Amino acid sequence: MEDIEAAADALLVERFGAADWPPPATSHERASVPGFALIAEPIEDATARSRPVGFVHVLEIDGHAHLEQLSVLPSFGRRGIGRLLVHAAFAEAHNLGHRSITLRTFRDVPWNAPFYASCGFAETEPDSPFLRSLVDTETALALFKYGPRVQMTAAL
Image (tube, rainbow, N blue to C red; front, side, top):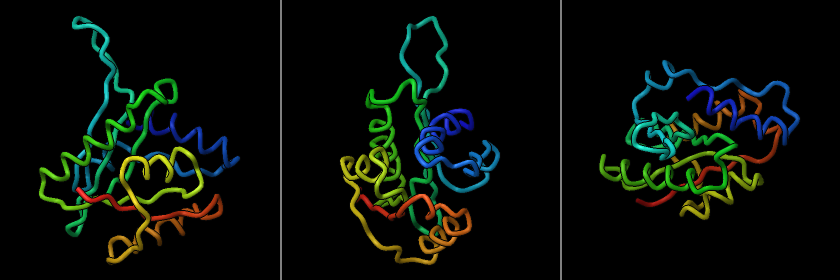
């Protein structure tokens, strides 16, 4: 998952000219927080083992389902894999009893907020200590220097 996220983040690094972009979370870091991850693998043939090409990681904290990371290898981009992962995350979060799912993203990056809006997310305000803490984390990481960040929510 680290390699997939690093490859996907390279698109943002290039867009923003960001020499100090935060490194991806390690698999251990992702496994140490409550939630789930779903992995996308391309279908090749029944005898070949394919390698993952994307993932979605959803946190479950303080009663919230929060889409923390969606990454797809750029070489597999624009094939609907990200959208399938988002909808799979919706289904899993719903099966786990959540009524909505949130995320935070860049408002003006085409494959961020506009993409998520096309998946059913709408802009909302952080309305809990957990969601407000995410804004503090983004501030500490200096993400706002690259453009406006927004919270988005989708009903499940």
